Length: 313
Length: 264
Image (cartoon, rainbow over all chains, first blue to last red; front, side, top):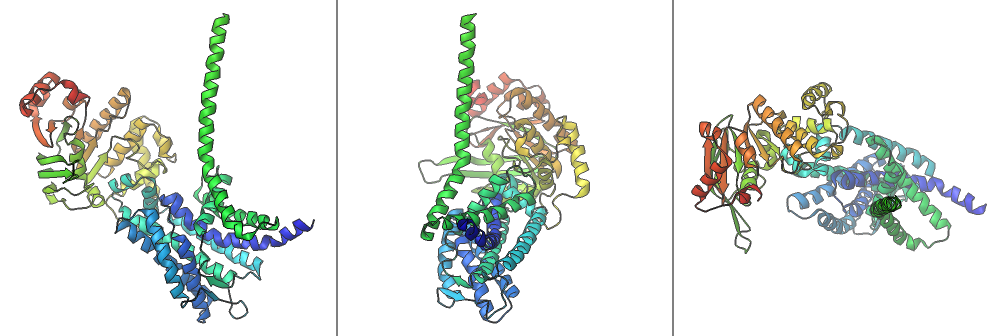
């Protein structure tokens, strides 16, 4: 039973990480699912949020203020991607990649040309720490619930509806007088603000901001979105779908904990994550292919049966 | 009132694919005019509608709606004055959103999208009243996703959305071409009703010469990006398809077979 007790002992940490990264996954949901814009800014903006929060806390300013800073900094990075896309005509994916690349340098600058800034829970009153995973879970849960509530409200408003319309049908949106450049900016800013917030919390949790902390974040975000979508496929309510995203993020980290317990090399984690996301992305495609084949076979079988009956008669 | 003055548009200028789509096109619609637009493939019918809608900037000339110059206004700013229905039923509505959400989006055309609720309380009843006359049962499915509706239902909904804010000009771009004949006839009937009830100035592009003759008070024929025929009043009422073909040959200076116009 040693295996299970050890795994169980890791649960608080997995859930805490899942909830913190759930905020980022909610941001990914906004761009990927609602706006239909695969935004790769997040790999950079997560670290931006973490770096800003860490630097502010080290500067002696309370952690909640640092999180507001992380939120704003994340939003700014989204604005940069949005401007690259809407004002300079750069395709969405490429705009995100450019911002992400540029952010690597900016994040180093924010941290004073160092690759990490440590914030110890011994020196500063932090809102999250790996040493107190349950307390972190409680705080992160409050953030997730608050964020889901705000998003439910926002996407019910006129502006939020316009953002959803832009993702669903940009031509129709413009015909209905929606400035789709503006709605894209709004969604990208909102999304990356959440990613920045998540980074701000995560830097506190792991007691350091690190220039590599966002690497592969988009894949984890997508994994959470897709796991949530599969598990909550019957849920129609918007709030339920968002909850699914956070649950998906928690499940992702539980699976990771399990995989590590099984003795896999943590260096292989990115490979495993990418493979898992690839498979989940492929499932709808495979499903439809198999369904088409089965449909064709069943029709052929029915036709064969009919002609046999005709011969017999 | 809609005025197009010497409107020119060339696609891919300076390349082998250069195509003059609109060639000093001039057209004036009076308030309440319902003009049908016909012409062969590449005559510039859809291009003219896109020019009015502001999908891209025109090269030369000007476009005025009710006297106001909209030539350089972006597509979404112009939307306030325009109602549009497209050939593809998928284009006119947001499939991932519900019927009431689509109508609510249309009800705010030309207004600033704020942080007030996307659908106000009283609006649902208004939408229900609006949908009832269609006889499609949509009034009981306000919260159904539009993606679940048939092509005909989506076009009917798009038409209602286009007329909701009483646009100064209604643009119908072959909006029945993708529908089966029975559904197409229904949507056309509805279009007539909507135009009449709201007294909308309308441009309706069609491939069907019979429809072009049967609907509206004016018939405009385009060829090579310009207006070659403009028939209205009593003249239009007496028009027949052979008449139209004969007049087209005379105006364009070439013999044509009816299929080039009908089937193009």
